[in-house]
Image (cartoon, rainbow, N blue to C red; front, side):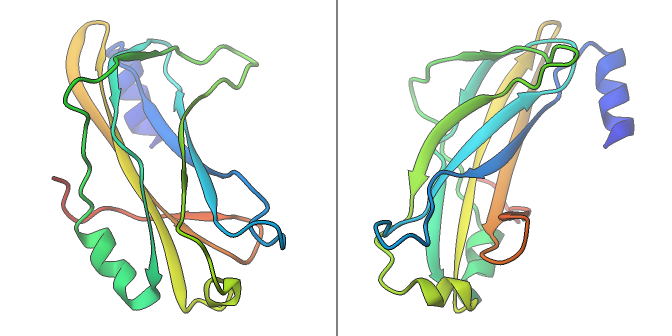
Length: 161
């Protein structure tokens, strides 16, 4: 990743990546869904322009079926998008832009997720340009990890439509 970042900086290109953030205390008795917000960071010295965010999708279901979902992520971009600009990072300042927050369906039995019987997968993408041209896309895919210090693991969509 460092080599890729160095190449993009030499070419004055944006370098956009995402992270998933838990939006609620899903284990609380008053919560009956899982909320996830995708954050976008441009870690280059150059802005990402004409950025279009796809609709973030969230899937919840039996863990054996999660592989099939990940294998065929269907990333959909809006037909008449609002174009965004992601500013470059500033020294000493961690800036990020948040995309929409997505919610799972109603969770009847939270222990199914805690015990790995059910899984939650979040995926989407961002298309953008650099100030000197070029068209880029950053797809993202995350799997919720109900146990441990890290709440999300990354996955890679097998085929992107």
